[in-house]
Image (tube, rainbow over all chains, first blue to last red; front, side, top):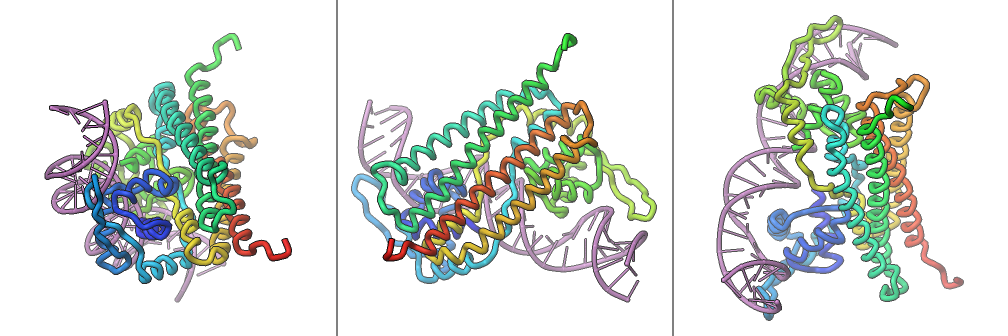
Length: 189
Length: 189
DNA sequence: TGCATCATGTAAGCAGTTACATGATTCG
DNA sequence: CGAATCATGTAACTGCTTACATGATGCA
C-alpha cells in the first residue's frame, strides 16, 4: 500500500495535520497520488497505532485545534525498507480510452464534447503545474542552489508537466480522429 | 465501475471466454485497463445475472470446453448510458514518483537501478506497442480502409505509444538527476 | 444569515489483489 | 513425466469511494 509511503514522504518533507495532508494530496503530491481526507484520517490513525507516526495536539488561535503528525524512527525504517524493495512498473487505468473504443458502438461525434472537457481540464492542470514550477524552482523567488530534496521534487513535477503535455497532444489527436469519423469524405472526393 | 464497461467494449469488439478476456486485458486492452482472471470471472458472473451478457457453452476439440460471453441489448444500453455520462479526468497513481521524492530521505543513488529497471520495462512495452501498430494498423497486412472501430482502436494505441515515449524520456531525466545528486561537483569546480 | 475555510471523523459498500484450488490437453 | 497452455473458479483480505456527520471561525 503506497498511500502509507506517500504520507511518510510528505510528513518527512514537512509535518502537518490530516487536513493539511489532504490539501497537499490535492496539490503537489496529487501530481502522482490522490487520496481523500476520509482515507487519510483512517490511515493516519492506523499508522500512529503502528508506531510509524507521532501525534501532537496543537492549539490554534482563530481556528480549530489540530493534530500535527510527524514521522518516528520506526516510520523512517519502514519507508527505507520500501524504497529498497523493487516495485512493478505501473500500468495505466484510463476510463476515457475505454470510452473512445466504446464509441465505435455508439455515436463517435457524441464524445467530442466530453473529450474537449478533458482537454480543458488537462490544459488547466498544466498551467497550474507550470505556475508551481516557476514559483518553486525556476523563478527569481526560488532557492539557489536547490537542496537534493528540491531537485527530486522538481524532477517529479517535470514528470507531471510532461504527462499533461503528452495528454493534451493525444487528446488533439483523438479530437481530429473523432471529427474525421463524424464527417466522412463526401461522394465528390 | 469501469471494468464492466471495458468488458462490454471488448465483448462487442469480439465475443469470447473469460480466459480470452483475461488475455486481452494483458494485451491490447491492457494499454489502458488491467484486470486479472479472478476479477474477470467474478464480474462476468454478476453481469450475466444482471442480464448484460449472454453465456453460451462451446465444446472444443483438444481443449477444455469454454463459455463464450456476448453482450445483450440490455448490455448495450448500459454501455451507451455510461458513454453519455461525463467522467472525471483521471489523476495519476505513480508509486515510482513517491519513491523518487522519498529518496531525499535515503540514498538517491540506491534508486538508480530501480529506475533503470522501469526504463527497460517501458522500452519493452513501447516496442511491443509499435509492433502491434505495424501489424494491425500501419503495415502491409493492415486492412485499408480501416473501419471506424479500427480507427478508434488505433488512436487509443497511439495514446499508449505516446505515454511510453513520454515516460522513457522522463526516466532519462530522472536518471540524470539521480546521477547528478550522487556525484556532486568536487572542490575543483 | 449564509457561505467558505479549517478541522476531524464513522460506516457501508464496492473494487481490486493475493492465495488457494482443480483439471484437461499438447508438446518435448 | 513434466512443463506450458487452456480453462474456470472460491475465499480472504486490503484498499478505496461515497455518503453521512459535526462543529468552529471569518467574511460579506
